Length: 221
Image 1 (tube, helix red, strand yellow):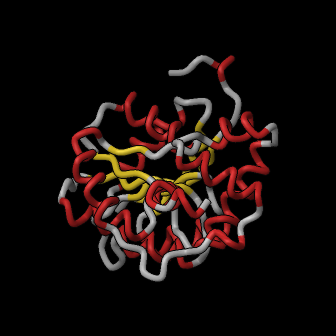
Image 2: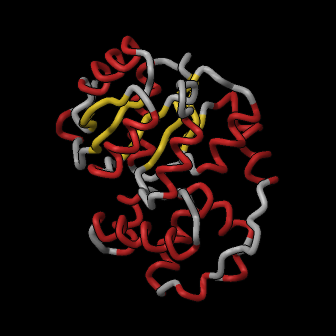
Image 3: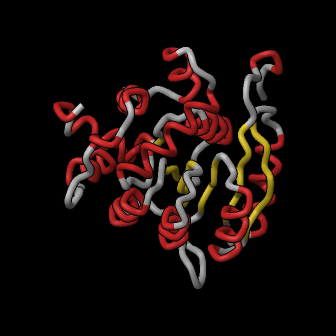
């Protein structure tokens, strides 16, 4: 599916879905892409939280409609545990309320299950690289959700280091970790550390939230 010579990094991916056939199909699809390493699968939110808090994969592909603990609550608990894995909601639901709730909980992307396999792989790779990814037909809904979201007692950048401010601005520009590392002439692993720290300092759950905050508060930086 991809040119082996183009591989630079490998992202560990956890699949969370209560349907065995869906999990198996996704595992087989991800295994075809050399830059993705499907480390496992979870059939419930509870199981996902156990795996994520132990292994902290680079990316989580999360279904919404699961019994007992749905995807939204699972995302919320993962973020409350201060795990900063990228989370892509992968669902059949295009309900506006679900999109709003997923973003507020801390999702980094929202994709619909009717997309082509090749587009799914591309989206996962882009998200693993630090980009925000959403199904095209949801962009109007996403934009409205981000515009309408209010951050009560908004965070202050006062505690950020100069380097963290630089990283934050580049996140807002939509740059991936790899691009940020190249621009700042630092290691990609160092970028990941900066991102995790600045999200903690700002009390934010995802890069999406941080990017929107920067756009709305450029004067603070």
